[in-house]
Length: 232
Image (cartoon, rainbow, N blue to C red; front, side, top):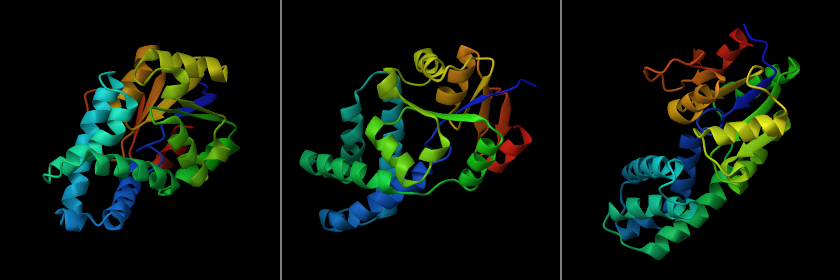
């Protein structure tokens, strides 16, 4: 077994429960902006439409087809269009408000604080590599009390690259004085985290909260964060 020193974590969907936090944020906005009066009488369906558009747009964003600003407001714009609401001003206001509320949310996956404490106590050096927006990600980390655990936070904006591109991983290794041989990537996203890590030569841990099946072979697979204690 390799002697790992540097553990590079993904943030969203791995430690920070983006799905729950996004849903809470949008539900607040649903009532604040009185969207029922605009014809959106089913919040669950509205959130499902947002989630589907968000997933597709994030894929386009990571592949370089769209810019950050377009992703931010169009995911809500498209969800509104599903209810025949063609209101660009409303979409952009909801987007601004959403990114104000979202980072204040604190829902983490079970055992997040416990496992990070355990790893710190075992003298692993912990870092984050995230495709999320710079200011938003740092606020999430602060608000959910994760900032004390991580030595470096590498974002796509700071590195001028996105997972799964090798440049963001190279930037992370250089910034942390880590090497491929003493590092490992941990994340929930098969393409961005696992294939991205494998393609540069990193060992990987697939944090498979949703217990999905995949043909990709990470170094390790877990379905609960406590299982990291069996690896490290």
